[in-house]
Amino acid sequence: MRTVAVIPAYHEASTIGPVIDGTSKYVDEIVVVDDGSTDGTAAVAREHGATVIEHVFNTGVGGAVRTGYRYAIRNDFDFVVQIDADGQHDPTLIPQLLDEAEDHDMVIGSRYLNESIEDYPLIRRLGISFFTGVVNTLGGVNITDVTSGFRVYRVSALADILHRADSHWAVEQTLEAAQSGHRITEVSIEMPTREEGESQFSIETLALYPVRMADVLIRVLVFR
Image (cartoon, rainbow, N blue to C red; front, side):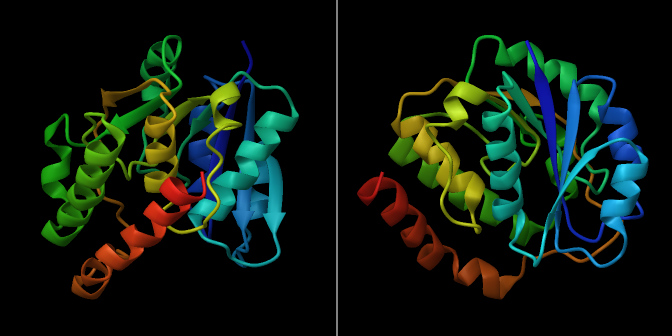
């Protein structure tokens, strides 16, 4: 079974190297999708042995991971490990996700199955709970952390649930998988908050969630 790691990266030159080094022990190839960085992220990734695909401009995490998924599909990999470039996800936990992937199509690393979620701001926890609740209700599943970006996919399933939009990709993709009857499970994964950069979550973004959720539902429930 061939496994590729997909790492979306935007201005992560200071952290991408150790992430690649740690991840390389558990996968056959690493693909870094440099999403329009100007800080040398792509060069650092190449120095550490990763295959690098560069976006001309920033598309967001959804666009970056979709590029990586397409690479995995084109090159006949069996599993995709998705891991962040900022060091928030511990590569030594990849084997736990891969073990579960033997019997599932999507494995999500959940912060809600351990105490690490308590370190996240209340606004962010409310946002995660909002989207997770909608997916559980409409998808008929029982997951806890739909926005987690630490995941493993069976590539044959990815071909059926490739998301269309660049924003809220995880919500769209997970709901699509649930609606299609794909096998989804979670693994308890501790994820400390990142030490660098600013959170995208605020009162304003929380207020916009119902509108954004409507957009996701239209894409999945109407156009699937």
